[in-house]
Structure formats: C-alpha cells, structure tokens
Length: 253
Image (cartoon, rainbow, N blue to C red; front, side):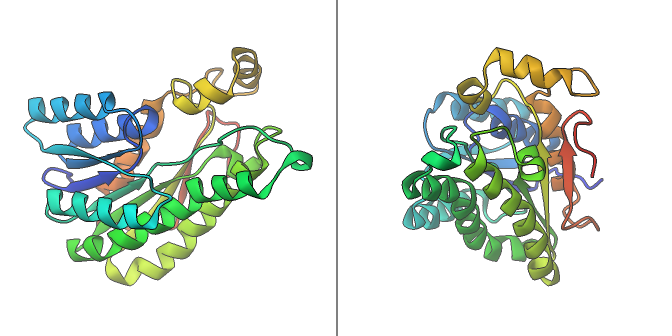
C-alpha cells in the first residue's frame, strides 16, 4: 500500500456520514484535504481542526454539485487550495424520497439522477486535468448495494443511478488508464449513522435487514472509509475498474 503522506485529496459531501469519515481517514493517513459540503459547516470545521492537530492542511468549500457553474468553481477552489490533486472521492448522493413507479414523475426522476450521476460526472470532468498531472492518481466513487440488488421498494430511481455508478466506474477506468488515473468504487450496504438512513430507514426496517446480514450487524461509516482510504493509497497501483462490496456478506460478487 502506498503512502498518502503529502498527497492531496478532494472529498465531496464530507460534512457528515461516510464523507466525513473518509476525510478523517485521509487526514490520519497523511493527506491534505479539500472538503466539499452542501449544507452545514459544523462537520467541515471539525475536520479543519483535526487537520491542524495532525499537522495537515484542510479547508472547506460549499457548492451545489448539480449546478455546472458551481462545480467548475468549487473544483478550481479545491485545486488552488491543494496545489493540485492526487485523490478524488465522489461521495455525494441521495435517495431524496421513497417513491414507487406508479407515482414517479420526471421532476423526482431527474433530481435523483442529477444528485447521484450528473454531479459525479461534472466533478470528475473538472478534476481529471489536475489528477492527470499527479503521475499516479486515484478516483473512488460511492455506489451502493442497491445498485447490485435493486434496493428496497420505493428506491427505483436511486437504485438505477447507483447501478450506473458501477458502469461509470468501469468505463472511466478504461478511458483514464493511459493518464495514470485509476477509477474504483465501493458499494456499501446498510450503513447506520448517516443522514441517508436517519432520513429514509426506520429502526424496524434496519432491524429486519440486519437479520439477513451474515455478520449479524449493520455497518458504520468507518467500515466504508477504510476501504476507500486503501483504494486512495494505491494511487500508482494495479487495481482499477473494480468495486468493493461492503455489506457484511449480503451480496458477494
């Protein structure tokens, strides 16, 4: 595993949950980190304070990643702060709400697609010129068990976009390989302690899901952060186009 000391990382959606845990992990591993957030500065401020105690650099930048102009600006801000970029973690995503097919409308359909796929495409497009200068760089995309299995009822639009993240990862690994940029994904299952499940998953539903997990527990944000830090650290490695499934054994590819 390569050393991340002195490497420069940009993490989207790092104000809470998985994104915040990833930023923490990268800081502890030696990275300087540019923190993107959409709402709420408390988490980013905590990360900046952590960076200071570790002798690392961190700063945070607000943007709506479904807005093309905002993405162009925030990636520029992040790169200017970092001095370039070795690692990109595309963490932003969301279910928005559970809605069955018979009540699906184009407004929700497009919103979920924009949050989960358009944002990832825009951020990656803007970051690639910086990553290509690194002489070995890593992109890690957040997919989901829903993209493998279809998700729970009411998550049709979300599940489709997370399946698309898997294909985006494979296709982009082919496209960017000759620039020394590896592209991988992680696909978490039930990860409690996140805004996603606090909003969309009842305790009863979580308990029922846990009954079907071979490890007999839900995951937490650090269960996801650790593999992401590993994939980031293999910035000049030989793993690309892959997805690590993090679900306690529910789905084994």
